[in-house]
Image 1 (cartoon, rainbow, N blue to C red):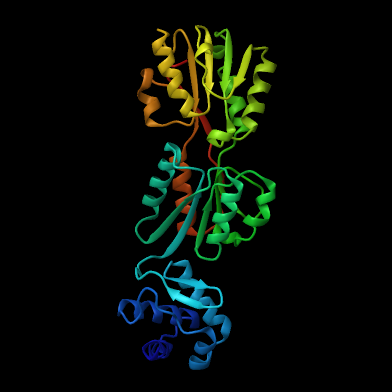
Image 2 (image 1 turned 90 degrees about the horizontal axis):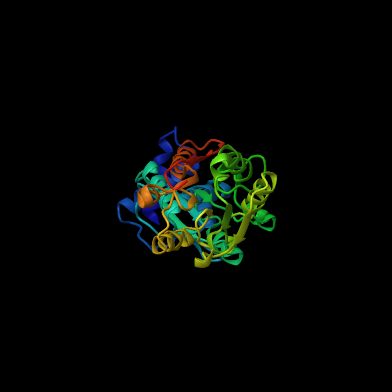
Length: 339
């Protein structure tokens, strides 16, 4: 305590530092000097006010800055404690995604690499489960400098998201209208997907029917995709079916399969092989969300996909620059031989 108070008072000579910066810098230097370690309790706000004469809000602001860097955590009715000694971290970021699928893995990898070593990224997965999503947000609110969240598109969750400071929140992947001043880097499902299907309707139309394998409860897909599909096949008078899992008896020559979930895509490819059906000739396959495996299998699987790596780069840019960002990353057709 004496070391800390002495250090804060010595920093008063540095007129370029604000009062809260003097406190946070003094605590950081105390950590570096090993005067404070993990588990150590910081002086109470009231004690700091009495010892150094700063306003209470100034001390609180200094402690909150250290929380954002991941050095300090607060415990209700117990005060503030040191939880990390890596003082080189600029900001601690909470990254809340759907699940550790390949596209989410790509996002996480590019995002953390683009931020660099001076940012600490803690990752959480909610699996499109509302109680889990609520639990994660309640546990992280107030403990991070930035919150990068792939939200569940449920309006009942808006008040919970509004519990995060607007300038600290970035929505990624899916959009939900939290407010006009919220940053987002998301994809758009309805107009983009319909437009792509229309652009390729002559290719799609060469098949006898189009089957949509779609189970939103398994792969966190937005229900709007089902609406888009039905609108497209209805407007173009195409024979179609929708079912939730890959069914071997449905795999026949002349069918185009539109597959949202990769867990259904690979069994479909295997079934085609077992039945002697050539993908791209006997049957067509159109998948959603691109990855490297789809470049290699069956001389390439065509996909409708957003560039998740670009999304991650923009998200990292927002964190570094700390400015309002509202971007929709385009969805595009990646044409390969499966069609």
